[in-house]
Length: 327
Image 1 (cartoon, one colour):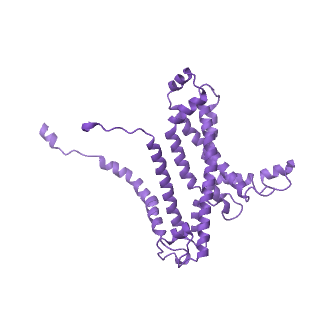
Image 2 (cartoon, rainbow, N blue to C red):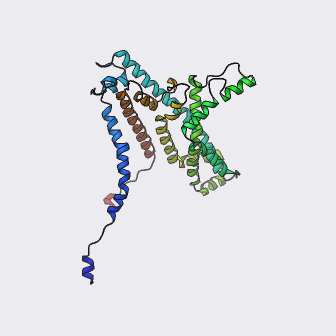
Image 3 (tube, one colour):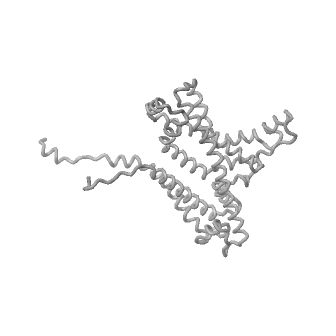
C-alpha cells in the first residue's frame, strides 16, 4: 500500500464510544432529577385535596406567601397554611444557624490545631478517624440512639441517671420541649458533620506554603496574627465552599428533625421546610399543590443564595485588564 492509499483510508473515530459509555448517567439523571423537577413546577399550579386535578394558577404561591384566600380556599384556612409555612422557614433557619456556627467554630479550631507542626500532636490520624466516624453513621441510627438517650420518661438513659443521682425529681421533656429538642437537633447535626468540615479545612491549610509562616515568624508575627492575616484569607475559597454546602444541607434539613419525636408525626417545633413538604404529600388528604409550590420556592431561595455567595467570592478576585490592540 503506497502513501496515497494510506491517506485515503478512512480514519476510524472512537469518540462515539465515549458518548455511549456516559449515556446511562444522563438517562438516570434525566429520569430521577430533571423529570421530577419539571413535574414539581407543573404540579405547583394545581389544587389540593379533592381539587388536586384542577389548575389554580399562582394560587398556591399566593396562599403560602401572603395567606390570602381564594375561591377554593377560605381565608382562615389560607392564613393557617401560610402561618405553618413561614413557621417552618423560621425553624429551618434556627436549626441551620445553630448547628453551623458551632460546627464551623469547632472545625476551624481543630483544623488549625491538627495542622500546626509546632504542636506535634501524637495520634493525629487516630483522632481524625474518630472525628469523621459520626459522618458515616446513618441518620436513622443516630436519631434512634439519641431518642434512647434523651427519652422523655424515666426510662431514658439521661433521665434515669438524673433521677438516680437525685439531681431532679421529674423527668425532663427533652423531646417535646421546644428549645430542648431544638438544641439537641443542633448538637446532633454539629456532631455528625464537624469531622467532615474539619478535614476540608485541614486540606486547605496543608496547601499553604510553609515558607509563608516561616517568614511571618521571622518578622515577629504572633500565631493569632498569622491566623487572621495568612490562614483565613487563603482559606476563603474552601471556607465559602463549606458555607454553601452547609447552607444547602441546612435548607433541606429533613432526617433528624423528622425522626426526633415521641409520636407518629413530626414535632411542630421541629418542622423544617423539607418536613413541611414531605408531610403535605403524606397525609389522608394530600396537599400536592402546597408541597410543590413550597419546593419551587425552596429551589429558588437556595439557587439565589448560592449565586449571591458565589458572586461575593468572585467580586474579591482581581480582574484582568484587557490589553490594547487585542494583545
